[in-house]
Image (cartoon, rainbow, N blue to C red):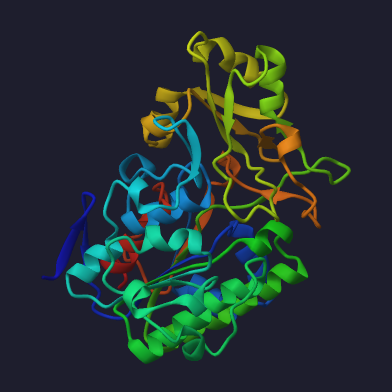
Length: 406
């Protein structure tokens, strides 16, 4: 077998070590600023001799939907993961979307392993591990819980001894560095045919492009990219979403607390605001992103409320369920009656009393909206005949890597 078919797309099986890297929160300007400052010499060479475009991530521009789009090569309408967090209408409970039961499509990673490839996955946070590793016969572990990896569940043991680093804090740049260090060690010691590395956006939530801290983070990554290339790897680098400042002039968070607004308009708790950015790691963003969905009571239609919400200062777009599903290729049964998207510098909250912002020790930076869709798509090989005018997506990463790495 030389090719596999996954979710309607055809891929060549790798003939050399092949790696896709998802740099969480990588607004393209992070790379531009680091390259300009001389902090990414490897990347500068690749941009000159390889292939690169600005692509779009899927909406909402959050971690889970985009990582799953990248590894399935498909939109959320196909794979079903439409946020980090979901209102389960059947049970009436708000839940995390980190269980594989929510996944509606196979991953390219599992398909490649079934076709005989050695596959390895390293993700920063454990929330993604079970989704990325669904039905995968290979190595799949998180940096967050690397010390708990077992042969039976993760396809590997002794990760800390292999990597030579301690388990890092989940709120640190070191969590992402562990991912890269593990990737390099796996490539040199186990020589996987296909590898997927996914980082955390802790640094991007706290530091703007061109800052000392951001440049240091991208210098670290550049070093590991060079090591992977030295090991003979074809590499594609993309991101799950971008990142922007979400602040007022006084540097306070620029928030529309939509649940409070709707409670004031309609009465207490008649409408339900869901914030799909929510995950177990909210210290650096306070569960505030630029995308929300709204569930309405039976006696209200979407059109009754959409125009009123759209008139709020800071709101960019309000769509009824069917329109949002069609425009953004979302699973219609897993989003609210309305999808609400804020402008570039604005985030949407639920009720103000339910957001703990005490952990914000820097001006708020976040994502979720249309402004965070642009992401890099870079390959250290030449894509012959690359159409730079086409709308490329981050979920074209494996197509680039396996079908076009000249």
